[in-house]
Amino acid sequence: MTGPVVDLLYDVAAVPRSGEEAVVTGFAMAPGGGYNAMVAARRAGMAAICGGSIGTGPFSELVLAGMAAECIAVARPRDPGRDTGCCTVMIEPSGERTFVAAEGAEGHLTLADLLAMDLSGVSYVMVSGYTLLYRGAGAALVRWIETSPNLPPLLLDPCPLVAEIPTGILNPVLSRAAWISANAREATHLTGEADPEAAVAVLAEGREGAVLRAGAVGCWLATGGAVTHVEPYPVAPVDTNGAGDAHIGSFLARLDATGDALAAARYANIAAALSTTAKGPATAPEQNRVLSLLSSVETG
Image 1: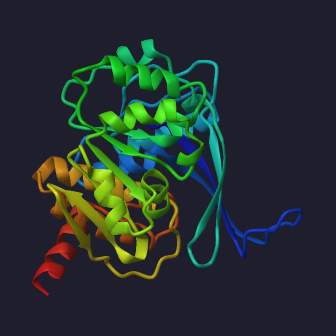
Image 2: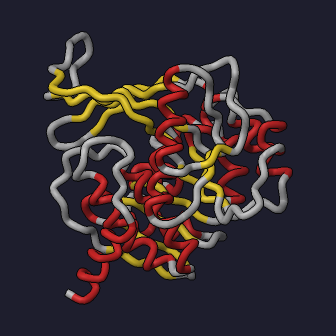
Image 3: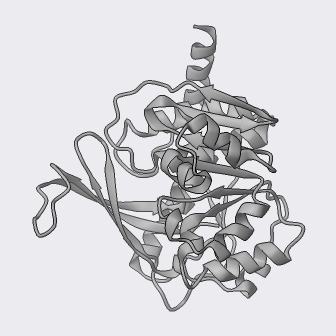
């Protein structure tokens, strides 16, 4: 449950200091946010349906065009009174990205909206910390999770603003999540553990498993009482925007296809790495490319 947004993508020489202005070397607009993970899942072979809110207006039309191009279905009617929100993304020459976001329709959900969705055939539900953070959506999402005993397994992506999510909103989702996929900073906040192996082990307690994403050093997978460091796929990144989403969507798709979490994590590492070698937020590679590279790595 994460809504798409429109990314306003600025290539900058450096992120400006307070009161100063960035030197901009390029600009583009593209669907982003929850769209990224859905695209990654689709390109890894999994069907995807958007349960987040989509609005009415020019940003929403851009999102819907992108979803149609990727064959991503829409679970609910559009919000007639709000456009989809946007996120200003500043991308430095190193590929690092900085966000400033403003919510739109994706920040608004009601329990009735969620109960009306048809989840038949849905294998996993991805819940974003961003949706939990929105005042117009978080409480309804939690109520839906608490009162729907037959939901598919949940994967929680805590999001970089996890520290801002009220514990009364976050804790019910943590208790229900079958999987957590978090970056190192998010995992440390949730567990108090700075060591990634210790943090992912704590995240996995009482659930099917957890993934701690660590970018250029790969990821840690905890499942079945064991913790495994999954080696990275080395690349020269040009744009890290959406890499975490690419990892999550790819991991879920391959977990659903194979039932093998370790194989899914290895696939996701390659897919996320390749996504950083192209400009744009939704640049996850096609399945055949990743499988070919994965086969070469395993036999090399």
